[in-house]
Image (tube, rainbow, N blue to C red; front, side, top):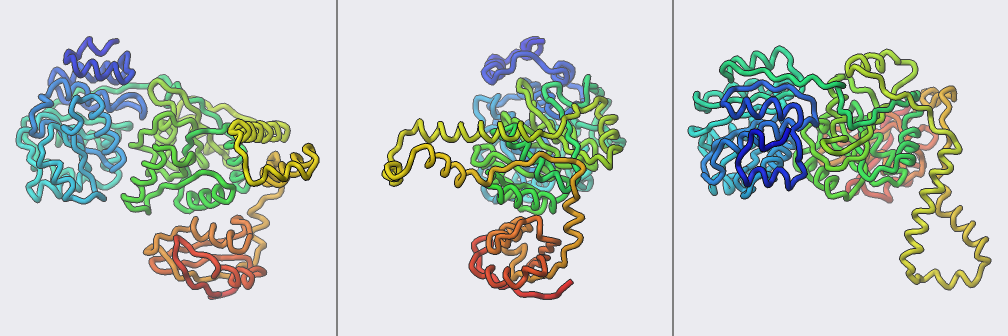
Length: 518
């Protein structure tokens, strides 16, 4: 169905088609006409189904975007979703400054300056919106539309009290739209407070995940997953990839491991400040690095164009998060791939996931040695061709006259690429964690902590760099406000302490000492 079936504003329709939107998705077909009728709506649809446009387009059709008073309000649970939703509105508007995003972590005075210019639409997180309302910087008396986006997350993140407070600022005569990927009873209770005889729209997908996403699963023991991750990155060679893990500790460990293997990578998790998270996301969107390791805080509300690959390092503990994770790829009009690691000894977790999403993941065999070798060769050829095509003379050109060309080329390849050794994984090999359990650890104290911006990944990388031990040999890490504790192999503790003073962590010098033996 075409958008002009229900929408008539010529500028809006032009913007829609300019951005490559041709036909409506299911949620758009169902929601847009009901919203245009002036009815309240409860909309349930999966991530990546075009849900934001389903409410943004009829709102833009229904308001006067040139009047600089607030006519529509969209509430979002996170800063990231707030920014994404604001961008979604802006791309359909002739004057993008008529939509303003309000969220924590940005100077409130900057937001005051934007509000003073006037705007037709506000997209906000509940806490920051309340700050502006209490300071009388926002006026909602002439509001026509209220949207509560990702309502399930809104309540799960503890915004119930803020939502009740916001209710007192909203005009009683308004149209309220509530959208969510899931519909627990708490959402229906919220609806009773905010809405009047809402129309329920539930888009039941043919699959619980987008049909544009290829979903695969690899079986590997816990100690094999790091190596498997490297192999998948080699074989898939994604330009843009997100790796999801269940805990912050795992995020830090994966980050340190990939840094050790010279990957272009950064990380995102809940312990980071809003400013740091925004900076990381902006760099990722600008393709300043290719791999983002994240916890589930990043699985919703992030719009990354052309994300090639999502890797679930673990099956998520909350199965709904699987849909949100892989929804980052295979967005509308694009295809993508999602790869999940599962443990053979916990097949019940995989079976529970498949039951939840109503289909099986493709079982993939572990990469064979020949496949890995061929991939390394192909990668090497591409890099060599890139250098050769530049045809640049360097300070090393004269060395060519001193050696036989074939012997020189062979020797250089061995020097440059000796670290690119991939060994096929055997599920029956000895467990790495069995070896680790036998290590006698010593604990060292580092005089830097969270206040210095230090995370576990920084400590792993620093110790590995200073002492040339593998990050896998490092044990438990505890990062406190002003100090950190790291378990290292007892047999190497003196060597580590003798070397670690030669480096900095997060650009800062520090002290280190042995505190106890195990």
